[in-house]
Amino acid sequence: MPAPDAPPGHESTRTDRTVLDARDISRALTRISHELLERNKGATDLVLLGLHTRGVPLARRVAEKIAAVEGAPVAVGELDVTMYRDDLRSQPTRRAHKTALPPGGIDGKVVVLVDDVLFSGRTIRAALDALADLGRPAAVRLAVLVDRGHRELPIRADHVGKNLPSALAERVSVRLAEVDGTDEVTIS
Image 1: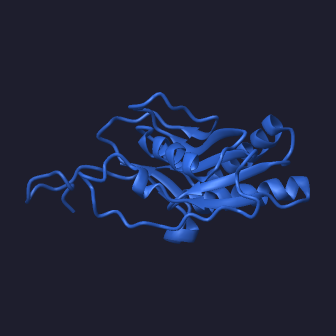
Image 2 (image 1 turned 45 degrees about the horizontal axis):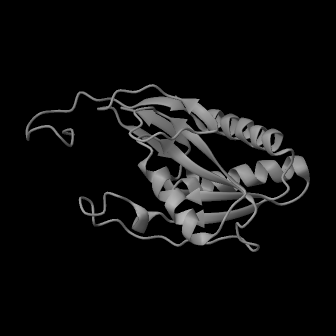
C-alpha cells in the first residue's frame, strides 16, 4: 500500500510497530487512576471529561478503575471540541460529536481532561476554550494515554500513560476495543 504522501507507484516502507498492547494499556490506565486519586486525595469533586473520539472510552475506563478503588462512582462526561479548533478553515470536514456533562456539571469541580494522544497541544487548547463556555472548574488537569512530544503550545499532561518520543513524520495510532475492536498503540 502506498504511503499517503508517496507518489503513485511507490510502495510504503513504513511498518507498524506495537508500542502498547492491551495489557500495557490497562496497566497505564490503572497507574493514571491511582495518580489521580493520590493527587486529588480521593474521588470527591472529581469529573473526568473524555475528548472525542478515543478519550471518551479512556475516561470511562479510568472512572471504572477509580470506582473499584474508592467504592463509589466517578462523574464522567464527553467533550466535543470541534467548533473550538483553530484548524477548521484548513480541515472543515470534521464531524461534530456531542458534549455531555455529568449531572452536577463542572463548576467548582476538579476536571480531568482525558485524551488518547498529546501531540501539538492544539486539541487541549480547544478543550480549555470549550470548558470556559461550560462552567468554572476549581482546577483542570490533563491525562493522556500517550505523549509523543512536538508541542506547538505550552501545554503538558499531568498524567501520562507512556511518553513516546517520535519523529514528526511518524504516525502514532491508538486503537481501542470500544471504537476499533482491539486495544493497541502503534507507531509507523
